[in-house]
Length: 431
Image 1 (cartoon, rainbow, N blue to C red):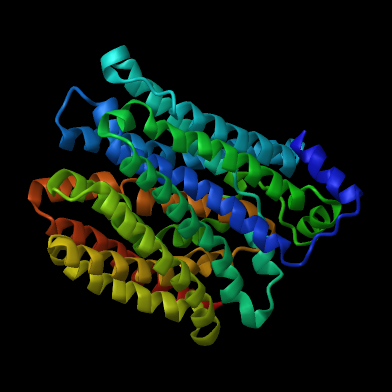
Image 2: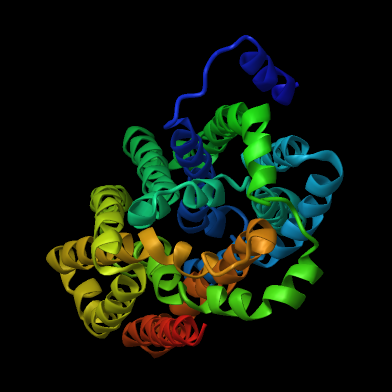
């Protein structure tokens, strides 16, 4: 029905403006990251007490982060499943089914029962719904980012590459803002009883808007023709790996520093502050909102810098800077309110500069035939390696061995990224 409505707008001769593809990309990514951050925040503030009430807060959060990682494990399988749907029924059917699954799984999380009410079934329900989110995110790849990049002028590729990444900052700002409102306006009991559930309903509504915005573009004949002309069509995952395995592997390791930093300035510090300090979570979420605003403008700056000095040079510099930041990050995070602010603002600035370009660093090496599926698969694996286990590993290490280990974990990601970028540069030279 949504796809028919999108086509009806086209047949009603409502024109597609040139910048509408960018708007569609941003709306789509914002909805995905909003879902991501709503769950991430709840995995710290809600699920340890609701679903893992049989243990202490620290271990409850560790278990919650383990469930959090399931979505990243499921994403590659989602890509494989929905690629078949795309190949057999079309991009519109794929997007509709994927975003319906994402919205349904997210909204159903609002009804998650407590461990006290249903016992171990609460954990099973949470895990199943989280896997549903992961499968859906694997299928939510619409190809618009690749279409945008391939239509970009040669001297503006960095600018166009950063456009989809803006959705991460916007999703974080909106999700954190809603939780700040609920935490400050409701009593602790009311928040745990019903308040935390509202953001998941909002996520479903945002997904509906995002679905229509994306179908408005991908379901029209003009864009279907562009996808076909640029060979942005689904290819079997096995065939993609067989022909583009080297680029998939490089693509998985290139953004490790950025993706590790992603969680080291969002999910992990919130858990550390919540568990080991007396700071108000709402105050720290407000700091995260301000940091996300800095990240938003840093993402835009990355586009300008990449077009001026080159994407690989920018990412290499960011990897070195993130490595340096990793060395002082533990001192800052444990340095009270001032240290936390410096940690968050510096971290988000570096995140914006690196995250804004990391997705396009290797995707441009895919041949046209494999770019659509290859970009999706590479993103899934990169998020799994770089971010999926970051919160649980960082919290386990920090709580057992000290906060310095979280910095060591981030440093390892920066080293992997630096090596991957050097290999990519050498391959470009050899080619």
